[in-house]
Amino acid sequence: MTPDIARVAALVREAAEAEIMPRFQRLAAHEISEKKPGDIVTAADLAVEAMLTRRLPEIVPGSRVVGEEAVHGDPSLVGHIAEAGAVWIVDPVDGTTNFSEGKPLFAVQLAFVRDGITRAAWLLDPVKDIMATAEDGAGAWMEGRRLAVAGAAPLHEMKGALYAGPTRPGVHPDFKRRAEIYGDARYRRCVGQEYLSLVTGALHFALFTRLLPWDHAAGVHIAEEAGAYARLTDGRPYRPTIAEGYILLAPDEPSWRGLRAWFLA
Image 1 (cartoon, one colour):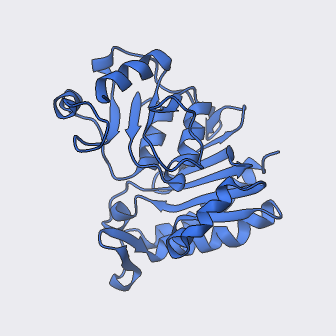
Image 2 (cartoon, rainbow, N blue to C red):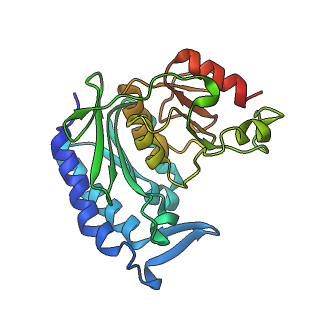
């Protein structure tokens, strides 16, 4: 059983309207800090996560919340994702650096996980006020419109997002040249925006080489419900309990195999 999709969507929007948008392009210096060098956190991240952590268990009594910022303070919390029962995975502001710089490329990601498997997801662009949602087996939706990924295309005509580089283990020895063929391949410092582009047909594929559950639990679920073929590059299905490996999303399995062979050794 999954929670009421519309009720959760309304809560996510409420949090963004109350805590993110009033601060967008208006952040004071004291509202920005570093968790570690180069890893930004803002008052909006903390406020949204606190609000959702307080109110999501009201929707599903007994559920736990695993938020990115809470895990930074207590890494053991991530272990709840693999436990039996209901867990919410929260990325309060995905693309925090963009947000802190006043760039409109950030998102709120929320996944509902039961017994270690994602069952529902919400992905909000607060600037455009558009939200993609998905429920296990019911498809992916945006403002009443069913979402579908782009159809397959010749390998070199596809558009994609490459969150990888030539120094990453396991990439093709000729990765740099092969990536350059995709001159407009995106790296926008916000995986949530890439997932929104995938499920609205603006992108054909995405390769991610860092697996944090708050970055991918919601996006992968929505993409799969929109028809994407998503697997770890060793062929396993993605689960939010998996922290190691790379994930590749494509329009279908033949495209996935072709892209995997092109980018990876």
